[in-house]
Every structure is written in structure tokens, then in C-alpha cells.
Length: 442
Image 1 (cartoon, rainbow, N blue to C red):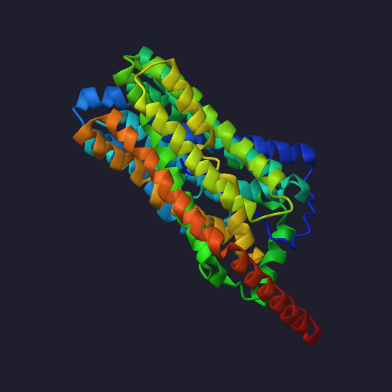
Image 2: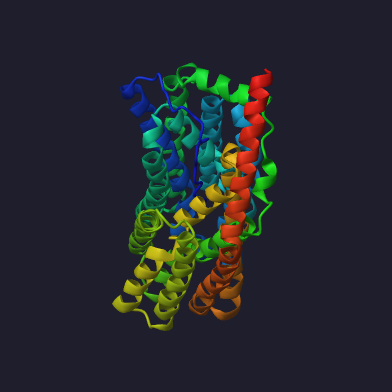
């Protein structure tokens, strides 16, 4: 599950010329495709038990089917986002949706593990840049003061799509078989992919703003070095990825856990797993709001909160998986997942604070890369390997300990955070003076 935070350039005027009704239509269609994205990605988790039984797969093989999507998203987000900016965002979004939907249909038609792996690989290619490009389209048709709300809605949409993918996937599989679970997600995505470019037109999405942005790129060299020039920003990338190792792994494997240790049928396991995912999504929003409220006058507190979320989720999830199956265990899992993804908001703010405003988009693409390569991609596979060796319950007892490593990395970031912020502010003042001098010469 790859979630991409977005921040626009600070000097953007935020003026739009798009009618409000049309803007909401653009949002609804783009949001619908986001839901389709995550439904296609997460439906696999709901049918893990059926695939394992039918094809005699190991847990590591199942984990790889999930991890390959996150891996491709991590590797391709940056280059595909650049291509979308060059060749047109609306056209690119429609092509992405068409690709992941056809690939999901390929999952439904797969006759063996190799064919399923290739189909899942293509799902990852299709979904790679949707988050960053989709939110860019939505932001371009709304005024600046709504951007935080829109970004939050997009993040929640990813969780909502995950819930629908697992809940509906499990229910459809219980009635019609696992192939129809994939086919249903594919048909939903294909319908939206065809409809999207018919209604959403590139020419109507603030072309003047795009022209101004190109002028800025031509006039000023973007300070890309801030993406990796400070120890605290690198630590933030790493800490965020390590913490998502925990939350992402639990989301992927919890339906199988419920099936094996609670004797739940596929449909019921998918429904309970969906509730746990909803807890994670709600926690993401609540923790982000808490971070903004508590850290308004003290930005460095965001690092302390990230550490607290890591250690809190480790404690709760470790306690949960030390218990036998039952209501108490499920309650603790929900509480642990409520704060497991809580670092998403603070990490996004920290990356924005530690990088130059003109490269915020690239900075968040780098954060997405770290989240996928360090967390969402290896988490399900490594847990599957552990499960093959010691069982899924024992593997789940090990997974929360990764949060301790994440907390340690965030503590390292805290030690250098203030110094790195001060250095960046000094460089920004220098850039502003240089830019003003250039304008006077011109």
C-alpha cells in the first residue's frame, strides 16, 4: 500500500479558472480511479487462502505476489511521474488505469503461479505513478486553501479502496470463486478508465499555471541537492519506510492469519481485515491532525511524535500477538494499527521542512520510493519467508520489532533536525537574494 503526500510550491498563487462544479467532477472521477487502484492491489490479500490451497503455494510465494506491486510502485513512481508531466497528466492517468485494470483481469485468467506473478507485475507498473499524478490533477482545479483537505481525502481514499478490495474480494470469492474477485475489480477500473478522458480534459485544467511553472524551471535551477543533503531528511526517509514495513505487512497477512488461527471463512476474514484496515486509515488522519495541532509552534515535536507512534505500535502489536486468538487480541491489533501508520503525517511534514519548496514534489516521490523499497515491498515477502519457517503467528510476533529500529532512526533525525532546518533557511535566504538580483538584471 503505497500513500504519496503532496505539497505544492510555496510561491504558487493558487488561482484557478475552473468552474467549481467541473472541479468536483474531476475530483470524483480521479478519486474513483484511486479507489480502483487500491481495490485491484489489495483484492489479492483476501484470496490468499484459496490460492494457497489450489496451487499449493508457500507463504513466501504469496508474499512475493503482493510485494512485487509495491516494488514496482517504488521503482517507477519518479520516472513515470516525469513522463506524465511531459506528455499530459489526463492521458497518462487513463493509460495507467487501463493497464492496471487489464492486468487485474489477467490475474483472473491466470492458470498458474508464473502467469499470476506476471499479471501482478503489470498491476504494479500501471499503478506506479497514479498517486502523485492524480493528486496533481486534483490540486490544479481547486484553490490553494483546500489542498490539505484534498490530500487527506486522497490518502483516506487509498485506505477505503483497500477495505473495499479485501471486503468485496472476500465476499465475491466466497460466492463465485477467487477469479471473479479479480474480474470484478478489473471491470470497475476499465469502466472508469474509458470514462475519465472523455470527461476530464487537459485543456481545462489550468494551462496558464503549467506555463508559469515551465518559465520558473527555465529561469531558476532547482536545488535538488536538498533531497539528500541533510542527515535528518535521509533518516526520515529510512524511518518512514521501516515503520510502514510493520503496518503494510499486517494489512497484507491479516486475512490469512484470521483464516488459519480463527478458522474464519474467506468472506468473514476479509470483512474483519477490512475493519482493521479502516482503523489504520482513521489513525493516519487522526495522528496527522494531532501532529499539526501539537506542533504548530514547535515543528521539532513532529519527530518526537513519530518516535512515540513507532514505540506505541510496537508495544500494542507485540502484546496482541502474544495473546491467544480471541476478542482481546483483535482489539489490541486494531489499537496498534490505529497508530502504526501515524508516522505518515509527521514524516510528510518533516520532508517538506527539510527540503527546498521548489522540489517538494520530487522530495515526496523520494519518500514514496523509500516507503516501498524499505517497507511495503519487502515486508510481505520477508514475513512470508518467516511464516514458512516458524509459522505465521510467530512471524507476526517478530514484525512489530521493526518499529524499534524505526524509532531509533527517527531519534537520529531528531538529533540533527534543528541544525538542518536552520541551514536550509539560510540557503533559502541566499536563493531569494540571488533570485531578486537576477530579476533586477532581467
